[in-house]
Image (cartoon, rainbow, N blue to C red; front, side):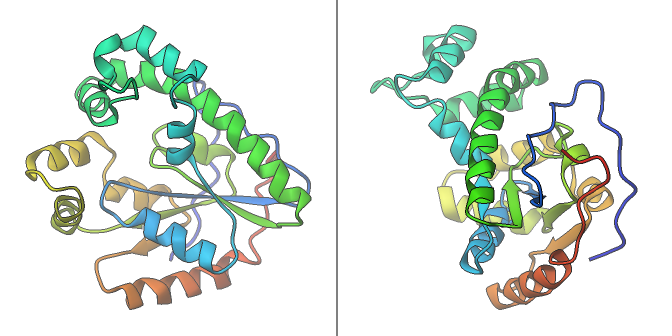
Length: 228
């Protein structure tokens, strides 16, 4: 944990803020592949904090029969489909992580759809009385969403630990994992721009202690001035 960075004005190309129900704080949760971001999200949920999973929402908006899937196929061709006509996410990831222009094109297709799902989810949580919600996504900082969140939690871990975790989880060689890590912003940048940093190089018990400390800090955090 460290002192919060100064609020950063939105970049000209940043997505518009999510509609913010009155009285709801929306905190970001991010981290690179293999960092343990999803584990932190699970720990927060287990402690009663609602977490919106933007990566899962991206899968939902590209499910078979959706306009999102049709748009991706139109942009990248039928080669991004598996034989069962579902999206070949691993194949598409290989394309966009090696081609920044392709990655931006994919983001332009998916992010507005994911944000619409997030706005609907946030309104539902507000109706349930939730005062603190978490927006979990891998690309919060890269896409400028940190400008309209009430601070960002960054989960970081050393590169070798991240590579080992992904190889153990998914199988396959480490080289593609290293390439994906290299295509993302590094943890030094995440540390600089995050309001809270969770270091996930140790045991699950270590991580749980950090999450408990994090929740103590999150409860009194006021929304940023001007947040919608």
